[in-house]
Length: 139
Image (cartoon, rainbow, N blue to C red; front, side, top):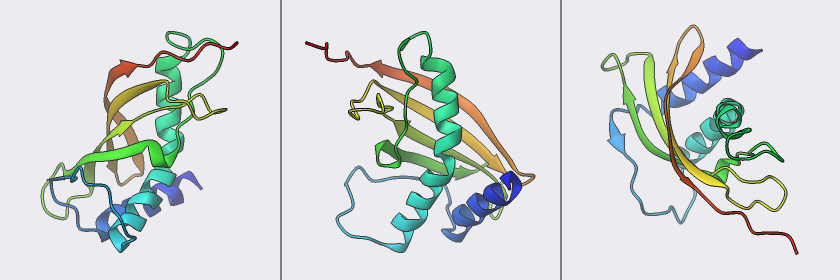
């Protein structure tokens, strides 16, 4: 099952024929094939991202809950092929705002780079914690 999931993810990335590019900061205002493929990729990678964030945030930053990642709080920053045109080793860099999971309050901001390759493998290559947000206090 895991192998099929990773193959599906790889096929989504390859369908869009990504070369190295930086995503525009302008938010999309309408649906497109590229946006749907990107959203599917986020859905597939969310469990990996959440697992890696949990090992960073708990218990260093949050002790009462594990961070929750939602696809709409993941922004693709860059994609590139590691081994040239039509190479099947890709690097994807995201900025992510994990939330508390209950009230969807962002608890921080992180930049993560994953390497995805056939095999299938999904490896966290780099994780930079950018910011910790102060949580509102309960009254």
